[in-house]
Image (cartoon, rainbow, N blue to C red):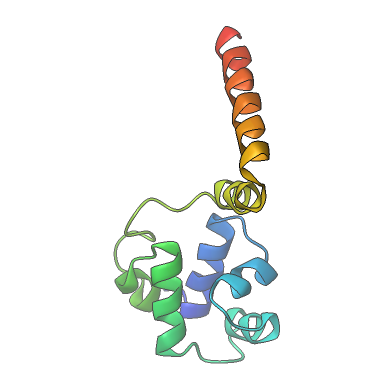
Length: 111
């Protein structure tokens, strides 16, 4: 059976996130996260809850390995990144981006 550290690393890998991005999302330092992932620091209950709530991870799976990794479909890190960027634009630029996306969708539909 894998350790909690192995399962946490598996979550990060499944989401295709760097240690830096993963640790930022659960609001801990990258060095602490690295210690958790490497098994040098025991993952505290609050961190397990943060991982579960932030990424939709099945709490039973992360603790003992039972069930599916995700309790809900895993979030797409790329989509989250796009949304973060989109929110930074003013309304006019957001409308332009939406127009571009609609054009790309039409082009994609023709292929």
